Length: 100
Image (cartoon, rainbow, N blue to C red; front, side, top):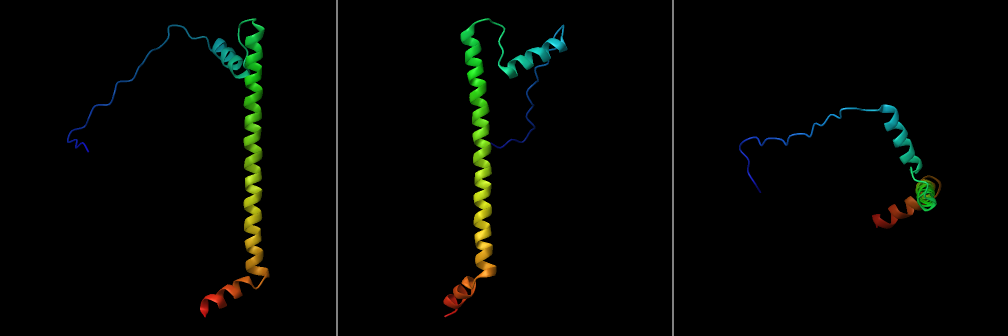
């Protein structure tokens, strides 16, 4: 373990300011990237981008479904234990068993 008695200097930040900034163009490029649209007319590139977009959507949908299913299962387990505790004599039997 290293002991430091003096404050170490923080690294300097890279501070580059472009000479020209076109906000509309940047938004357009960002939107194209989100949609998976490329500037080329290559059909294979467009096909790959569309396929990747569909796979990403399906992966997110699958995660959502599994998350919802997991929540339902947890609620069912908690409901089962609540039923055992409040509506059956299961707790009394356990207490009597351990109190002997």
